[in-house]
Amino acid sequence: MGNTEKLMNQIMELKFTSKSFQRQSRKCEKEEKAEKLKIKKAMEKGNVDGSPIYAENAIRKHTEQMNYLRLASRLDAVVVRLDTQAKMFTINKSMGNIVKSLESSLATGNLQKMSETMDLFEKQFVNIEVQAEFMETAMAGYTSLSTPEGEVNSLMQQVAEDLGFISRYIAQIMH
Image (cartoon, rainbow, N blue to C red; front, side):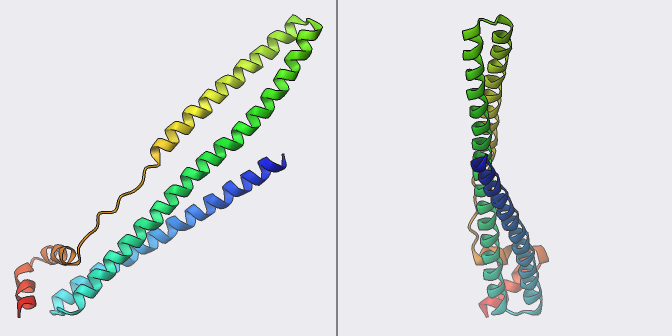
């Protein structure tokens, strides 16, 4: 039981770390939004030098957010694998006990006991199949997140278009 207990403790630690990465991701998302708001304000004030800096910060925060999400996703995938491993360890131990029981019932010739033992044996195989199917489904759900790389100018253009004064901003940059 010591190995299973250690494995369960590791699973809990990994889940905790994954949640921490998700919190960090949400924090970065808020900071990205704040930087985008600063871009808007700088553009409205005509701050041509400041707005690209805020755009760079927003892009950096977006990249950081996606990195945290990727790490959390990868940890979640490891947790699923370890959890399946712990369950398989328990099933293997149970199967060993069933085999011993089957051997003793075969030696005694007790048909009732053999039938009960075979039912347990079949039930364990069904459990193994369900575990394997669950594992495959869960792992298919953990795909890598892709981060589209944005350009500082395209982000600034998007913000300017949202404000409806792209031509005024471009004119300020040109002068």
